[in-house]
Image 1 (cartoon, rainbow, N blue to C red):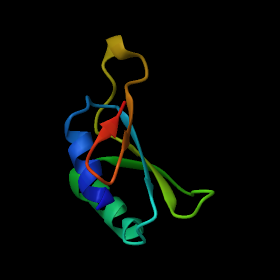
Image 2 (image 1 turned 30 degrees about the horizontal axis):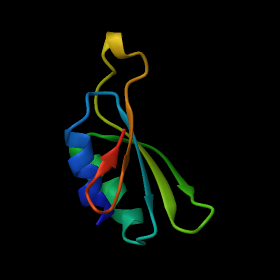
Image 3 (image 1 turned 90 degrees about the horizontal axis):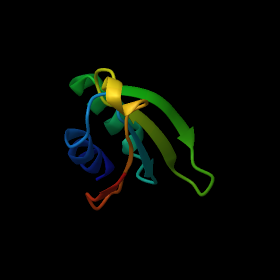
Length: 84
């Protein structure tokens, strides 16, 4: 489930990081926005993916640390792994 991969990834990143989730699971259109509301994350964008499905851009709560510039970006994969 993409929302589970998102939760795992978000828990390992500093405040202000950006996570991009690409999902072809229709349930993600409900699950990810709800998870963001419940956890204080910011759902910045939901866009259609050119190959089908959706692309979610989520920012972790807070502001990025002053030493990191714009924060980190990571991608959450449905298998629970992430790249950053």
